[in-house]
Length: 131
Picture (cartoon, rainbow, N blue to C red):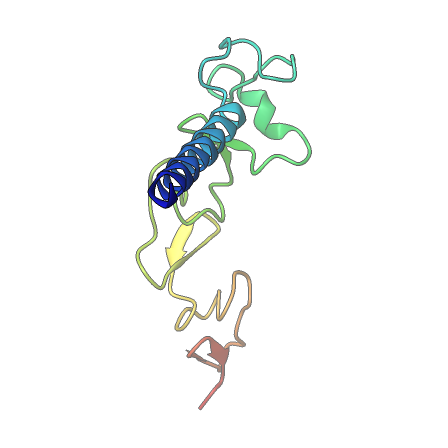
């Protein structure tokens, strides 16, 4: 009898684990738009893409005014799309005014975009006139 209770308990725990795993996968699927109409999202609104409608990127609250790989981006500051679509800044560089710069040494963008050092100063470790 004790063996039967143990077996029942093990089967119950396995069934519970399968149920939890299945419900978490279901929740992930419901967050995705896969399987829904390409024209309608889950809330019934029309799903707009910048590839088909580039003006969507000009709406207030958009990530940026430029369309790249069907995503709104800002070419002036986006490290993954600096100046143009797909141009990535290398490690340690940031995108300022559409150009990849090193903020540790660049006099026009010392430490951050737009932070200019004076004419006689230099940019060292991202600080103007450090030494």
